[in-house]
Length: 601
Image 1 (cartoon, rainbow, N blue to C red):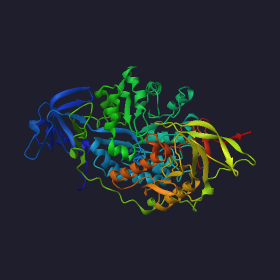
Image 2: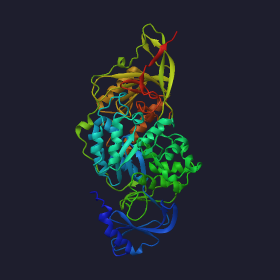
Image 3: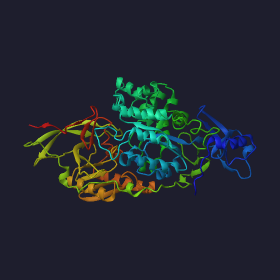
Image 4: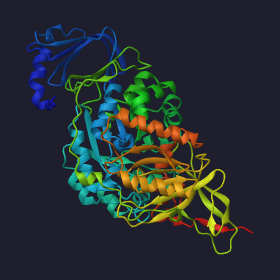
């Protein structure tokens, strides 16, 4: 089915006025529902909605004057009529899916608008990759807006990306039809220190009248935070405490509260509204990163809204945070985010405002999902061949590639260790005393090896370090070419032989995630597009990801969504300790640091 082009308000206005007045018939009428009005925060029973040209023409107690011979009538039967849900900040690539397949996965969950930041693919394919994501997003039957990535690399000098994004790239992208702003400004030290490149990107976005996304991943709310706020970001999703949310809102930023597959930051921040009484219109719900398994089994923005309600938020306030608040933030309040005249006809029917079952989804005036099943096509872009050939290892890796050499004569050493924190993005900078055998430092107990393998230019470079918190035991290794944000390859394991097998296997298949145990491949998720995404259906990818999860558990891992933790261990803009192609990075100081702290007596 060919996608019908949505008319602008100006193009549709004559018909909208005529339908509302009863001079012309509506294309669609939803009858006898409870109007969830997110502008007035009211529930208004026994109301109708009339739709024409994909937009809402009339909302009132009786739309019979809008019904003609060809009007489709949907009986709400007293159900809630809710605006389509908006995700204020997210990365499609985190779902391991292309924009088309991500849309296909989330539409049945009631998500009709997404504000996406494709900085993952920007690190691999540069501006071309962003354009490919943007173009496929524009083809979908729901609203997928793109924020131009701001930071590739995220921390200049501390990592090497496949491509770099420049202020000229940002200025060019601002003219594209689906670009709504600048993606999260992750290089917050650069902004704080007045880096000319970062400020130029922000200036280009503001000159275009668009929104600057924020990312202040520090608990420090002193002068550095104020300097960052002065640098122009309009929102931030990195808060983990109610003090973070309060500070951002007081400085004129929108506080974005996230519930992703592994980030549980709503509960600790929603108290700024539920207990501290701050104005909820300055708060936005988002997912940031959602795994394909979460999308298939648990939901998307409906899951976030339900969670906010469970945390004590009034259902109408939670819905505002996932609809009109988001639209207003991006300057689109007259276009979407509510059920009101002139807006895109994005409507959900649900029988329960708290449990939020998504029973019918309308997008741009068309039924796109019913009873959990998609009812429309989500068109695919023709991805070029070179986008499917992005994993370049240079040469086959061996177990020796993953050895950590000890100082001469040492029998034991003290090393810095990356400490994984369950359900949070930050890590801990830990230390451990490890034995040395034949000149090589060995992991032991909870401490296993981690390596970052260069995969963009085939240099053969490997950075080795240690990590704690996964709970792995036995002989195993897991490798992933999803390695936020530079997206080299992260390998974690207890066996250097299996680490080599896992890395080489991803080189063979062109990217993805793989787990080996006792020399055998136990799970593989192929991600051939940029080493980040699959154009298979979400259900297929989720099934493979679930098999990966089972293989991780069988290897001793008990962390919630441990794969997400694995994929973030190279994110050198979130404290405290990370790994990159440059070495081990102390993110509290933003500098490369030594792995070995000293020799044991």
